[in-house]
Length: 371
Image 1: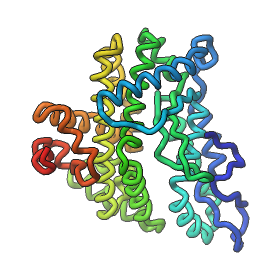
Image 2: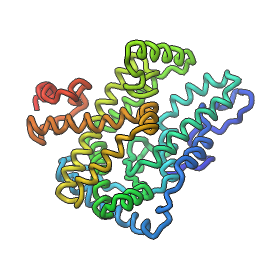
Image 3: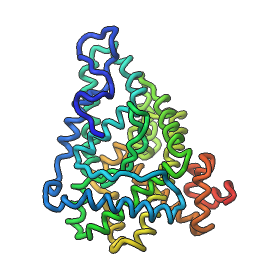
Image 4: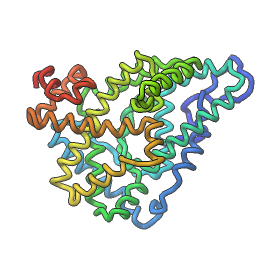
């Protein structure tokens, strides 16, 4: 699923005076795509002979990983996922398409307000540049991604694809001398675990999207929101706290109501990411040679320092990385207290998901759900 400049997502409008026609899109998406592709760059190994085996390897390893994950987690998924090896630019295109689909209601609300703003053309390009830089930066780092979160606009169905960013994978294999077959299986296990979570748990996908829609519905397109956020940040600084510690810029702009929804999102994603890491490592110990060193490398890679650390904090990426740690500690805590099968209660219904405080207190969660 790729996106060209003339794609179907959103209406094409001019930067001229507003008419009774389509409202302007608040983000100039073609510009965002060009910026993201430029920032992403191209991994030289993508064009080398080493890339020739990627697609056939991941075709086979994704099937193997799905079987291992199903047996380990007991989450049964419908059909089979399709493995797609992408380069960084293809990954950018796919994610822009998904973002445009998911954000369409919010973009329309912002667009209606911008239709009355004479500075709208400048704002559209500024927003596009910021979005492009973020996506381009992420494209340099992502290894795999499961893409069933956003339905296709035309058919209402989903691609059910597991993406692998070939150049980034090859780069790590070469840099750390990982055995390709083992490293690729290890990545496939993580991504197919996410597929099992979203397709093997009947309510998961609809619940996730409901949280996203709630969060978007609460976003206020009023410029005065910026002033309130600045005031909140100043109050946090005076209290001796970093205003970017909880959710980056997104958390800074959130209202109390939004923070409640963001807490639910944080809890869900911590469980999903933590569970994914635990399954990845537990199966890796059995089936992947060199898994422990791979795990150390990826952990160190997430703990960036210096300027990169600041960028992670500003973008809220640091909060996502903490989800891996908090979620993994919760899952391991449940295992230690009540055994691996006790975690199965999480998948029974949304009400059984741990709250944010319960993530740090698995015994409290076990007592509540009776696991």
